[in-house]
Amino acid sequence: MNKMTLTLFARTPVHVGAGNSVGAVDSPVQRERHTKIPIIPGSSLKGVISDLWNDADFNRTEKGKELFGEDDQNADAKAGSLLIGEARVLAFPVRSAKGMFAWITCPLVLRRFKRETGTNFEVPSVDDKEKEEWALTFENSSVTLDKKVILEEYVFDVLDQAPDQKIVEEFKELVMKDPVWSGIEKQLVIVSDEIFQHFCEHACEVVTRIKVDDATGVVVDGALFNLEQVPSETLFYTTVLSAKAGVLEPLKERLEEEKIIQVGGDATTGLGFCTVTCKEIS
Image 1 (spheres, one colour):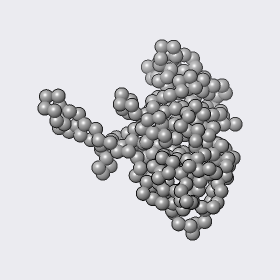
Image 2: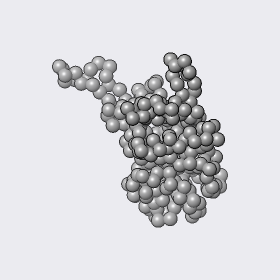
Image 3: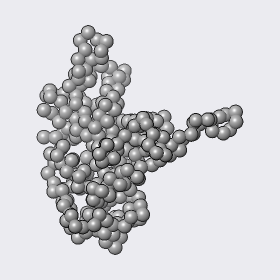
Image 4: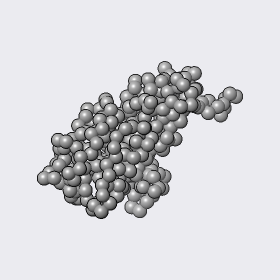
């Protein structure tokens, strides 16, 4: 089976809505139920990518039909051969007291990424007796201050343990076309699974949206709501598969030509624009 990794590097905040309110947030983002880490459903991604073949120059050619199938109104309706999984967070941006911000990841996320992509690096293991407030950084880190990392209001002790340099090398190759990502080795921090989960759950942006009545100059009744957004500079990844040989090549070519895609809602207010990169998996 042909397989490749597809990464989405958020240039702007991303909102893929869950459709129901949670507490004070009227429109939360979709999350994994068991980890509460934000996701982009495979159905959403497939719809966005399929739409690239609806342009005048790419109108449902044979390649498009092979990838996404025929609709139900066609007598020859069939499913496409493209399989797209949900996009998961690989690196999440968090405010840092030094270096402006850090990208955090954790052992669970790294194990998942390694399992799904077949990459060869050593996932760091920290003694279970260690407290949660630990961090691992790489050489020449720009977010380390006196052997500590300060993320939001939390202080983490940087362990002397050196994580596998192959992690940084693998991460660098995932987003080759975005200059912001080029400093990943200086800003990448590995934290515990629990801390990563906490930041992914509580460090997303919540903005207030309103609609003002032109006649009265005040908010229209019922038009005040809170919207949750995954912050810009978040890195998502997913795997794309096909049982047929040669099917993924036209998809890769089209995405490399497009370079930026928009996922989720509120495109007209600038949300969801992502740098997209494809990498083949041997």
